[in-house]
Length: 283
Image (tube, rainbow, N blue to C red):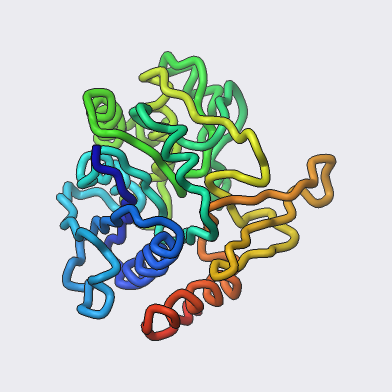
């Protein structure tokens, strides 16, 4: 059964450059193939094309931004796929344990089930109201997770999952379950994926070791020990609360490219070794 990583870069050339950085990090620690799904294949210049094993042109159906993750479900060229956001870097070895652990799962994420409260909180006080979704849409829980890393396998359950998400995006359910995201016409993917999981009785896989997560995320972090060349990814979380702890992960999700200086330093270390020009995201 084929397996590999999927990256998605739509609309902006800067996302293609970020996808290159993510691909370089994956190649440092895993030899599985890497596919890029994009609606701007002309942006794949000759010097970066070799870092992707396959470039798939997006079957554009009018979705914007993060909403296109839904297309990645069925357009992935692999039977088993680990999707990673473009603003991630694989920081160290050890991902095989998760590939082995998740085998046979139609769709899953690292997280936990929620039965009340706010989830997927974004700027401008946008969030998914778990209580409202449970009350109005016949589900008993909603998985809470960060959508920077997704795992899925091709098959009839994934098709059902895709159909549920696309139905939400085509109706007013998208405004009841999710919320408008960064760009006009774009909706946050995580609440919609969470709802589809609940509809199909799918569950996230829990964090069993805080030092060995599949995905570590950068928000709300007090201190960083992050070095992609030396294989280090440790962060201090929860400072100021009773839950202060060290979090470690195989894939680091630099949410919104923050902290920018640490992301750029690590990305440029990879690019230098690959013979590519350095980047400096200042926008």
